[in-house]
View 1 (cartoon, rainbow over the protein chains, first blue to last red):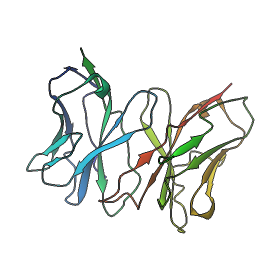
View 2 (cartoon, rainbow over the protein chains, first blue to last red):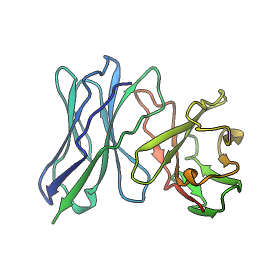
View 3 (tube, rainbow over the protein chains, first blue to last red):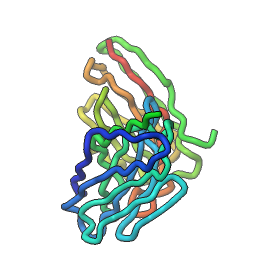
Length: 111
Length: 116
C-alpha cells in the first residue's frame, strides 16, 4: 500500500473551507485513496474514497491530481464539530483490508 | 443498536491479569477487524476476520494476544498476562465485505484498557 504524508496539524475558521492535503507519490494504479476522521474519544469515521476521479458526498469532496500523487479533502463549510484528526490512507483493492492509519492531520476549527 | 458495539468501554486491570474485550459487529457484516490505538498514536492493525476464512493474525504484537470470532458474528480479543504497554484503546470495526475498493469500515467506540 502507498505511503501517505500529511501535515501534522491545520487550523480553519468556522464557516470557511478546510482543505486537507495528502501526498501519496508511491500510489499504484489500482490503489484507492481513503479518508477517515477521528473525533476525540470516538472511533474513526469513514468520509470518502476515490481512485482517479474527483468525488463528492454529503460530508466532503475529494480532489485527486491527474498523476494521482496527491489529493485534497475539502470540507466546504467547516464547523466546530469538524475538529478531528483526518487520516489519508492508500489501499490496494486486491490486498484489501488492513488499512494503515498514520498519524493524520489534526484539524482545529476555530470560532 | 445499529452500530458496532464494544464492551467494556473502560477496563482497569493489574499487570499480569488476563482481559477479554468483546465486539458485536453490525448485523450481516462479514468482515471484522481489531485495531489498537495507544495514547497520541495512530491506529495499529491487530487482526482481521473475513467470513469462514482463517483470520489474518499478522498484526498481533505477541502470543499473549489472541482473538476469536464465534458464529461469524461476535468477536473476543483476549490479552493474557497483561503488561503496562498493553494500555491503549482497542477498536473494533466491521465491514460488509473485505476492505477493497467498495468497503468502508464502521468502527465502534473502543475499549479503553489501563494496565496498572
